[in-house]
Amino acid sequence: MARILKRIPNFRLPKYQMRDIDDIEELKIEYTPAELKKLSEKSGGRKKGECYPGTEYKTVKEFFDRSTKTYAERPFIVEKFNRKDGFEEITFGRFREDVLKLGTGLTRAFKLKGEKILIIGETTYQWYVSYMALLCGAGIAVPTDKELPDNELENIIKRSDAAAVIYSPRKKDQIKKVANHCPGVKYFMEMYADDKISGRFVGLEHVMEEGKFLLDMGCNDFTDIEIDPDAFAVLIFTSGTTSAAKGVMISNTNLAYNINSVTPYVQLTPDDRLFSVLPLHHTYESTIGFLLPLAIGASIAVCQGLKHIGNDLKETSPTAIIAVPLLIESLYKKIIQGIEKSGKAAAVKSMITLTNGLKNLGIDVKRKVFKDIYANLGGRLRIVVSAAAPIDGKVGRWLEDIGITFLQGYGLTETAPIAALTPDWDTRVGSAGKSVVWDQIKINEPNEKGEGEIWIKGKTVMLGYYEDEEATAAVMNDGWFNSGDIGYMDEDGFIYITGRSKNVIVTQNGKNIYPEEIETLLSKVEEIAESMVYGKEVAGEKELIITARVIPDYEKIAELHGEGLDEEAVYKVIWEQIKKVNRKLSNYKTIKKLEIKTDQFEKTSTMKIKRYAELAKDAEKTE
Image (cartoon, rainbow, N blue to C red; front, side, top):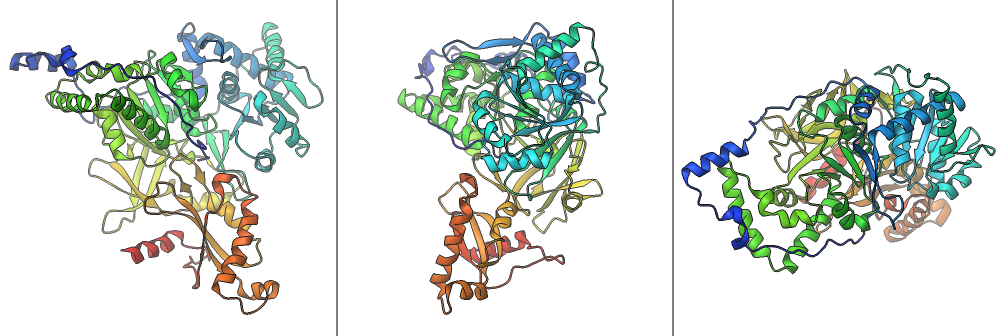
């Protein structure tokens, strides 16, 4: 998956006003056997392995129609459009009207039906409207990282053959520069602008007004579009730097069955509110953070920026957050710091011990006991989902200790994205979850430890890679998708990730780096014969260090830089070339460490480097 967050800025949570243990009524009860039985019956409980009734949608349009009519008067998107004003609630009904207007404008007024349309910008209401209009039949959506530099954005536009680009006002300057190099784009449409057509530029509001006019005239062409569940609907590029970036083709079936897969494992209702903090181009957010609440009639609160997270939580009172480990860990640290500053650390520890004991007896009073902590998070938070990278287990366990359900999801862009999830009744902190109900997961050719490559088969698996049959064939085997992750499965079907056999580097804050992109650039360096880029684990460091393992082309070095160079001189020559390559990369992708390799890489029969075998050798050396 594409990168998620660049960094976590400093943010504040309000000061804690916590009660002492003696002031908490729920802990004053004399728990006699009769009282224990009464409270246990009242609190209920769920049998392990018992799924909730799930949904069986075939397309996104199916649940869009249902929810926008059923919940027409309920709030859907909650966003602060002006920092000086409060959050504004936009109803399901208005969302429906805007999607129909935009879809009609795109397909009839601007003749873009079936075309690829790129969406770029920060999370905002008209991003949601644009994506939904495309999923309901206006065209093929190409959601794109708003942080891409000019050259990467230009490459994505050209690779996707986008006929139009919908962009937020903050991207206006970049789009104007890129537009000069993208003659194939018919229209550049600016969100929230009502400008009429000027050359290839037009305001999205104007497109919607054109659509409204046609709707008022009785045009139902867009409304009546029938969706082919298995048709190509979304194109998501793994990254943008070079032609090595893969375009993942997603269908309505993939997206709809992500929803059908989550609903049996997690109980959500129209009263829930998800807090949107991840960027919408990312499949976790666009599918689970957007389509899931749409399908169940819940609302979405848009975070106005990570530095505002504390205030936004208080103002919007969400019940669930989907985030990357780095953000969850930062939130956890802020909560702990607040508790310590209030002088209540010992009290909280005692409360955790007491409430855990009661919960073991079937009595859960955690939400009442720890309501002072919840108050700083908006008062209603009950679910935290960690996705995209491993997380420190103590964080998940502590959240569960104070009564928050801590879930972990597993998947890739190629599974749109959910393939496994921890059910809310059996969270197993440390596991990546168990296969969702519409997928199968197996460990292929496990070793003596039970570890092997994780293969996935089912309704969430992509159609394939865009215009790349070879890359598709490399990861698909009789319907099974090779995730590239290494792991094992316990007797209950829960997956545990232990490494990767493939090349994608997943960093702590959810950035994904595809080494083949960097290697393509290194292959153009005359002084380098071969290279392998990987994420190096360094003791004491949470973050992986982007490392280039290089076999020098000694003959070329001698020709260009003189004969008789020692090892140190060769290292300097190559490092100077790497610095030039780094200038062509986004900062988070830059090579931080160089290793000179004196022997040959281990390779497959098709002469591809066996990355996993190379890294396994490193592990053996350190044991």
